[in-house]
Length: 511
Image 1 (spheres, rainbow, N blue to C red):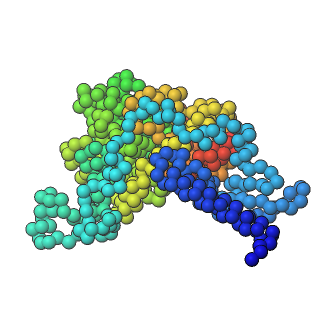
Image 2 (spheres, rainbow, N blue to C red):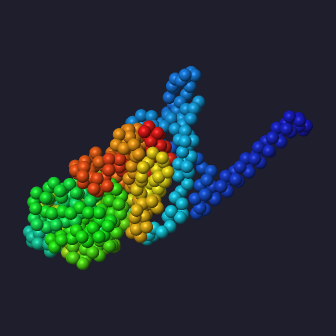
Image 3 (tube, helix red, strand yellow):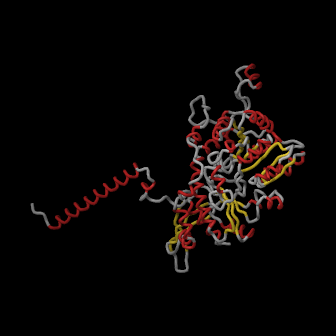
C-alpha cells in the first residue's frame, strides 16, 4: 500500500514527539530518583516554590487605576490586603528588593556556616525525648497521653486513702494536688531540663510566685535581675515589699554587682538569661559559683531559651522556671507555667507551696502544652534561622539606632552566649532613631507582624515594653534597667522570612 507524503510526515512527527516524550520521561524519572535518594538539599531544586502565604486565600480583585481598569491579585487576611501583585505594576516584595537589595539576600540564603560555628552542639536525642516524653504510660495504651478531666480520684479502700494522704505512695488524690496528665508533662519537662522533677502551675507568674513564697518572708532579702519580666519585678516592689521583703535589683550580667548585693539575709537570687526585654545575657555559672559560697539558691527564668537551647541546671542553677505559654507550648492558645528543681529537697520545699496557693495546672492545659511541646525543636530551628536573617537586615538599616540579638557579633555578651547556649534563639530588641512617636507609627504600620504581647509562638509578635509589659515599673526603674522608650521587642515566628522582612521594611519606610 502506498503511503502519502503527508502520512509520512505525520508518522515522522509522531516518532519525534514519542522520542521527546520518552526522553522527558527518562529525565523526569532521573530527577525524581535524585530527589528521593540524595541527602543533599539541592535534590529538591526544580520543584515549584511554596506560596508566599499558604495560610491565606489568594483571589482576584478588580481595581481601578488612572490608566483604566485592570486585574489585580491580592492576598487577603482578616486584617486586609497585606501584599499585592499588580499585573501592570510591582509587588511590595519587588519594590522592597530594589530599595534594600541586601535584605533579599538575608531571606534567600541560609544562615552562614561561620555564623553557626562556635555554638554548643544540640543535645543528642532531644528531638526524640520531646516526642516520646517520660516513662509514664496510659493503662489502655494510648499513644497520646489522655486528658484526665476529673477533680478527684477513687480510693481502693479506706486504708489506701490514708496511705495516699500520708505520702506512702504516689497515687492520685485530687487534681489540685496531682493529676496524671499534669504529672506526665511535669516529668517530661524535668527530663528535658536534666532536673529532679517538675511542678506545673496555672501560669508563668504562678511559677514565679511559688518560688518567691517558698523562700521570702519578712526581713529576708532577694537579688533580682533589674530587667526581668515586668510582673516578676513589680510583684517584689509593690506586693512583697508590703510584707517586709527586701529586694535589690542589679545587672546580673556584671558579676561584681551580684557579689556586692549579697547580704547576710539574702535567701534567693532570681534572674533571666537572656533577660526580658533587653536580651542581656548573664553568666549563669559565674553567678551560681558566687551563690554557692554563701549557700544561696539561684533560680533562672529560662523562658526565652527553653531547654532546647539552654539548660540552667547544668550551668549551676538550683531552680529553673518557664512560662509555658511561650515557646514550650508555642501556639498562643494556653497560659501555664513550670518549675523544675535540681534536687529532691528543693522539690519537696516548693511543691506544697504550689498546692497551698492553688495555682495548679488544669489537665486540659497540660494536654495542650504537651502537644505543642512535641514540635519545639522544629519551631525553634525555623524561628531562629529567620531571626538571624531579620537581625542582620535591621542591623544594616539606617533607621535602626541599635539592635541586640545574641546571634550578632555586636551583642555585648555574644561570646558568652555561644558558651552557654546552643543557638541565639528568636528574641531580639532594637531601637528606632525617631524615638517613641516614630515607634508608634512603625508598629501601627505593620501588616504581617502581630502587635501583641507574649513571645515564642508560631506567630511573629512585636510590642513596645515601656508602654505595655513594663508599664507598671516606674520610669526611673525602666531606664535603670535599659528599657528605654525607643525599645521594641520582637519575637520571630515561623512565617516566611522574606515576607517578614518586607513587612518590617515597608513599616520603616513610614517613619
